[in-house]
Length: 390
Ligand code: IPM
Ligand code: MG
Image (cartoon, rainbow, N blue to C red; front, side, top):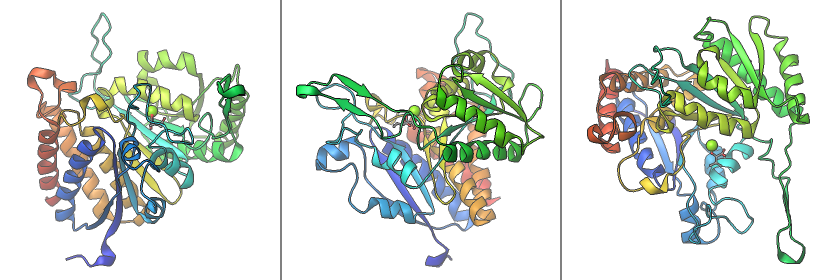
């Protein structure tokens, strides 16, 4: 029996579109592993996103949400972003920011969640989604890297604006800010992660950190690269590698086994991690942790996918793995082995469903064999619960 003080505070941000659907499955799995491991949660669900903004017309989440996130032990996010009724891009707020900014970019900056950590793993049984003429299927284990994205500045810095003489926008400016402080902390994080993982690249087993830059052109990338080599001096056991981002995109696809940990600036990281999801079976498998010194928020990196919303159709595995990553992070932070055990049970249940090949959603097994989102969640929850009890 848990007393209130043994409870961890969890904030959930289901968000828009398919976000709430996958969140339900994530929480179902969490519940299944919590009971046998003796974990108890005080769960606060905060409505948020573009649809919330349209319905409330003021903010993209209720007043007081910041303080609730600040006080949470762990934050889980579904997805945000909703099409504007005019049919041109996402709903924007009066200040021009995307409706859904507060739970995502707002939390990332306010809580200094400086590292966006995106594991790219092709689990056995999952076919990658690269459809070349050779239909090559990699041997298992060839894709096992982590891309660490700086999460608070770069092109996402709120320093730009629009010039609209006479009311008609003429010039729009986004300023890319790369600071020493943010670069140092995310680069150090990447080196530490490389050591902790202690796996090396699948190809040659070498511990390697690759900085993805455009240092032949951009000042910010030259600065990021120089900081990378400075910080790297403290890690003589780790190979330092740089790749220019455009060339990197093809190497990522044609030799993923070369990469162990990669680190990059905000916008490049946003783009290359969606591309990298192709190597792990698609966006339905890709998970991201927004990690700071004191706080963390975990999410599937797919968006709200409005066209699939309400159809109980999309893959909940990214969300389920986000729960697993969150438990692992909190377990480490609180030195609580129950959380680590619960995380291991979730991953093992996911791996087993992928190996057996069912029940899985359409993106992994095709329409004719597809199970519903909720069926996948139910099966993984049941199995994870049994494993956590063992
Ligand atoms: C992501 C998303 C966000 C980003 C959006 C929703 C603002 O694409 O987490 O990758 O650009 O960071
Ligand atoms: Mg993205």
